[in-house]
Image (cartoon, rainbow, N blue to C red; front, side, top):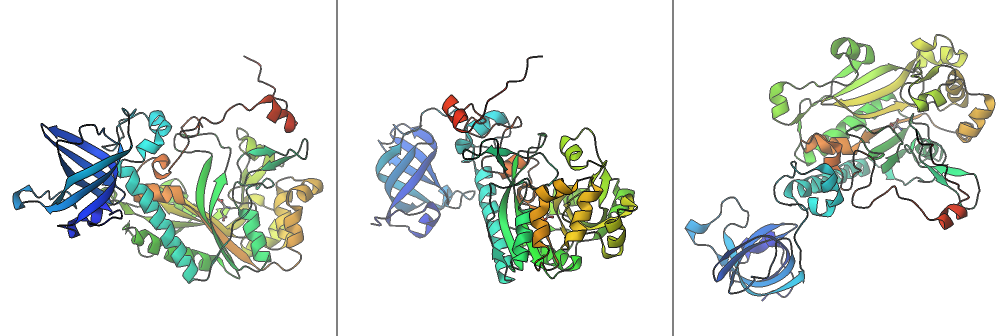
Amino acid sequence: MLEERTVISSTPKLIGETVVLKGWVATKRDHGKITFVDVRDYTGSVQCVGFQMMGDLTPESVVSITGLVKARPERMVNKDSETGTVEIEVKEYTILNKAKELPIQVDGDGYEIKEEVRLKYRYLDLRRERMRKTLRMRSKLIQAFREYLFKQEFVEVETPLLTLATKEGARDFIVPSRFNPGKFYALPQSPQQYKQLLMTAGVENYFQVARCIRDEDLRADRGFEFTQLDIEMSFVEQKDVMQTVEEMTKSAVKAVGGKLKDETFPVFTYEEAIKKFGADKFDLRTEQEKEAGVLAFAWVVSFPFFKKVDTADAAEVADGKSGWTFTHNPFSTPIPEHVEQHLKGESIEKIVTAQYDLVCNGYEAGGGSIRAHRADVLKATFKIMGYSEEEIQSGIGHMLEAFEVGTPPHGGIALGLDRLVMLLAGETSLREAIAFPMTASGKTAVMDAPAEVSEKQLTELHIKVVMPKEK
Ligand code: ASP
């Protein structure tokens, strides 16, 4: 007898052995004295047969089963199951955790269940096969990215979560400081500035699976946090970053069985894209390719650096004091031909930035740029947006300083991991690609945040809550 736990997927190779299985009761069927139970673990499920026993098992209870692996007679083989050639004759079983009646069903794809309820009981929702598959695929995809990058001698570095406003164009989440009354940290909208400082530090090839937090207006398909594969490289030009990212993306997508439309991603300028598709995100797939789950990547380049501020957007108004704000990333550099006019702040609408976006199936899959690595160029960007000398110093003075002590030319990109997983899994909501996403109204899954805190905590933080006046 095998005393140790056997995983279910290996049972077909163990005919004649007594094994110990541990897992969940996926289904149970009572046929008089005989009870059939499908037991599931992370590798699969198998039919277990008990004689005058197991009547007390409830669906989704956790059990340990000791039983004999028996070959099924030819006509009883279940071709739809990977363990369909065998069944387990149960000798003994123990209930490790009995499940009461479940608030949601975990068989089936779950699309018909209300999302709020699925997220409240996410630990159950994640048991369904569709979700288990997506979680595993996500992990494998990240592994493939890591493997590619490590082969290219990239270094994985973590950057702080409590930091200063990072200027990605959204509102910041702020965190009070107990030791500094009236002062606040900001949660990072991206590791942008730290990854650039790592270039100053001589890291040269950086990456991070980074959590980014942005207080954006919630749309159906967006939460406050997301994960990006964040990359930065020194001594590179636009084409070098694009080539690395293209190779990396292809290898990772293939590693999880994804299908690509193009081996070489087509490149469009922003102008071409707008003319051809009416937008800088577009879908290059044919109807047939859509049905086949193909991924169609493309690059968009040559974006305008600045745009007029959208007065309905609070973050834009804050960043574009002059009426101009950046289109993508204030830390980008203008293309070499436009550096002069950028420094002078002339023909602002015509300045083109060394920005490149990766588009996939109508979505923005990633974006990056070659950066300003000279203090005067970066400063000019903030001057164009109407920042005063004082505001420049308090906002990005640390970057300007770093750019005067030997910062190499550099550039990078960030790929949206949640979105890529969503596309690869053939899902249409980002929430299907994340283990514990927020609800559409900004509540956390399972736990009920945001929540009130105690008076004592508020006092410690030197915070007084002023409730909005009722309208
Ligand atoms: N920091 C940018 C973003 O989060 C990406 C980049 O330019 O690397 O969108």
